[in-house]
Length: 466
Image 1: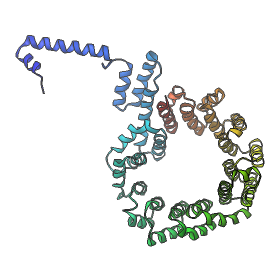
Image 2 (image 1 turned 90 degrees about the vertical axis):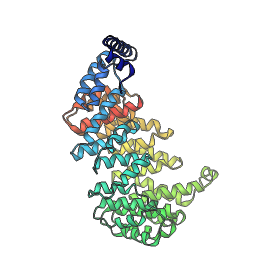
Image 3 (image 1 turned 45 degrees about the horizontal axis):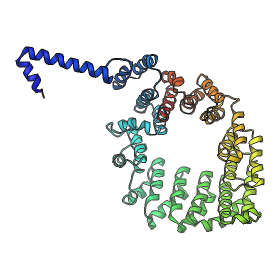
Image 4 (image 1 turned 135 degrees about the horizontal axis):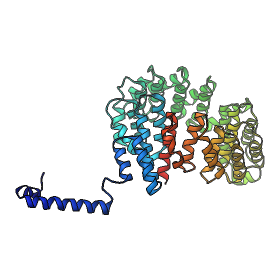
């Protein structure tokens, strides 16, 4: 609608000129006082962002930086646009990597996720964005995600299943345990943990836990059965003989959840077998529970229950197992138990003598959370900085958070590596952990799209910390 002054101006040429001149003066003053005019490098960045033009935004940002210096929030918005383009693209690897980085970026990624969630059609990108927002307790996102359950794409259906109200949709979820897609079967098995158990549903899950051809589906069914209490115990005990180590491991945890007292007795048999994932978890549970039941005086007098002594011995034996993953799992398990001279000596020895760099990283990461091991763990992380590999890079990321210049130097070298994996991991860590997003900015135009995505993820995460 035209204002009264404008109407007067149209009837009187002089008043019209005066009105236009007045408007011009007022607008000029507003630009000067509020910085709202569409001139200057910052405004140019915003215009490029509005056009969804990454290259233009980066050019404008370089001009802005020359005048006003760095601005992590503004750079973060450019990084978010890089991720948005990749998430909405057609290349599966790039789309998945971008969605992962958006998920890791926390609340700073919310505007991008909301834009993707508002796109039209049943697309995987939209479903994934809705899934992340639903996990952050958006009821609207959850409702929209569930409405996509009729999709022909199994990946979308699996995501939509996670938004189902298990108490209202129990029969539908049980039916999906027979779906042709393993991803859908797994999602349905997990979703049923929120349902009120009844005979047919429990029988269907028990069958899935026994005969589904995919390990991850059986594992999900076992985990859900553990939430139903003691009546599932014997079925769970039977899964200790599953062909998959992951399912056996899940069965140990599910048994404890279903009936802790019976589980402690049943799991003791595993401590007479060679070290395994399930055995290590059983030893950890037995030691942890029985230590908690013992009094402080008992602990001081060395009067811990026999089960604790056997469990600790099993874990110390696993520290020297031939399989690297078992050694790291055993060390982490031991670090959760009450301190004792024998355990502490074994853990420090593992830090000093471990030759597998991945295992050393896992042990150091777990033990540095305990003050009594902090110095030894930090020394182990520093030793890892001597080689340009992924464990060294991850060690650098951990120590860079605390201001280590050597760690930052390692990350800076990584982004110039010929190894694409190192460049990707280094780009994220240098921006996010070392808080050097400006040094990573050139990688937003890297020839490797995944390097661009990891760099953008690190920059966006850093923008939320600044």
